[in-house]
Image 1 (cartoon, rainbow, N blue to C red):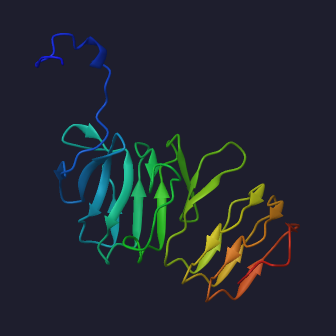
Image 2 (cartoon, rainbow, N blue to C red; image 1 turned 30 degrees about the vertical axis):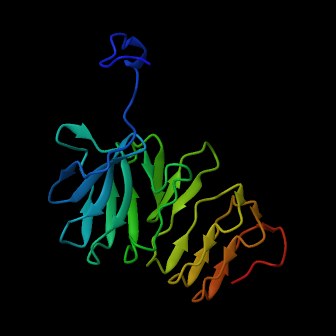
Length: 201
C-alpha cells in the first residue's frame, strides 16, 4: 500500500475538476454550479421578463446554460459568445419539463462559435446544416432555418406551436419530424421532399 501524502504527484498535474456538489456563485441573475467541467446557470433568479446571462461571475467565465428552474416571468433569454453548451452536454438539448416553460424566444450573440439563434430558436452550428437545440415552449409560430434534413422528432411534443414554416433550401422532411403538436394548424413547405406520409401532427 502507498503511504499518504503521496510524494510523486506529477502524474496528477493535468487533472481537471468535472463537478461540484454545491452551488458555486449567486447573483441578481442566476445561481451557478459546476457540471461537466463547465460553470453552469443552474437556476434563474432575475425578476423580469428578460434574462441576460452575464459573461462571468466571480472572475470565472460562464459557459453553460442548463437551468433546472427559471422564474415564470422570464419570457426571453439572451446568451453571449461565452456560452458553449445549453442543456445536457451530450445532446445540447435544453429540457422544458422543469425550466423554460414560459419562454417565447432565446437569442445568441453572433460571435458565439458554437451556437446561433434564428427567430428565437437555438441551433448548434454545424457547417451548412445547423441542428436545432431548443425551440422555446411558448413559441406559437416556428420559422425554421433551411436544413438539409429535418430529422425525426425535430419538433415534438410542443404544446404551443400553431404554424410552422420550412423555407426554401430545406430538402428532406423525415417521418415523424413533426409529432404530437396538439395545437398545430398549418405547415408551410417550399420544394421539400417528404420521406413518408406518416408525419404525425
